[in-house]
Amino acid sequence: QQQLGPNLTFFDLQPPTTDMLAEVSESLRAPTPTLHPKFFYDETGSSLFDRITRTPEYYPTRTEASLLHRYAGEIHSRLDGIHTIAEPGAGSCEKVRVLLDAWQPTHYMPLEISRECLLGASRRLADDFPRIHISAVCADYCQAMAMPEGLQQPGRLVFFPGSTIGNFEPTQRAAFLRGLRELAGPGGSLLIGADLQKPCEQLHAAYNDAGGLTAAFNLNALHHLNRELDCGFDTDTMRHLAFYNSAQNRIEMHLECLQDQHIQLGKNSLTLSAGTRIHTENSYKFTVEGFSAELVAAGFTPSACWTDSDSLFSLHLACA
Ligand code: AVI
Image (cartoon, rainbow, N blue to C red; front, side, top):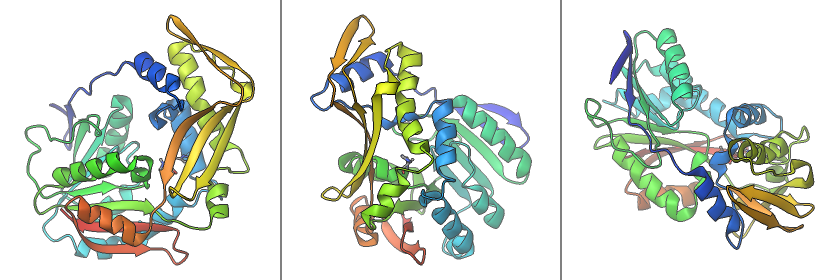
């Protein structure tokens, strides 16, 4: 625990470093080659994602932001006795600002695996909100949801925006929601964004923006691997694919080999033949009822849900 300023404390839970080569080798050699979506997010990928959220086609971020803005007061009135906001995977801590502005909680606790990103964002926040105490926790929120000593007082609002929950597979998602309930603690609540099912043309457009940013974002996973592991992917002969799988209610993103790809994985080589698709992401889309049922299954009691007038996106509040 380190005191970095009058209202900023840093907790380093030292997230375990993973063996990227072993992980990537295993997932690319699987019968259906896959890459975990976390590989999108190096510096370039995070900045591409940020630009995607501002494209006219990608509606989730701006729709959720306007719901938060419009209903911040109403949400607050339902959170009697909660003075702490915890945000797993807080990233740049931008989305929470509307809540900090509106509520002035006593305490904000971002959890983030990237130490640099966390330190930068929480320093800016601590300057901008001198009356809010920031406890910045460096942790892999997928692995560790337990709080360090000194932060164990329960009854938090857990904030998980962006429909990131849609990037988890159903079984993982159920386990993750149970983890969020533990993080909220007795008397706590969850405020979570979930993207909604809609006509597939609209979904297709959101993941195939005309400016090509989503294609660049998807392909950037390979640039990331080339840089970190020297895989030698020829990204000019890989194609971005994104489509809606209506049987599974999810957008799928893939990278398709237009020619045989000869790549290097440490000491071993691997050929992905022309036509092979590497599955890079699923983004599940929900109904309000279906998502509420998942919250109940994880032990929550849903208390309210807000959607925009076009039913694009939903914001759920639930008691832990
Ligand atoms: C981060 N996540 C919620 C985004 C999504 O829509 O599933 C990631 C993304 N993939 C392509 N565009 C955006």
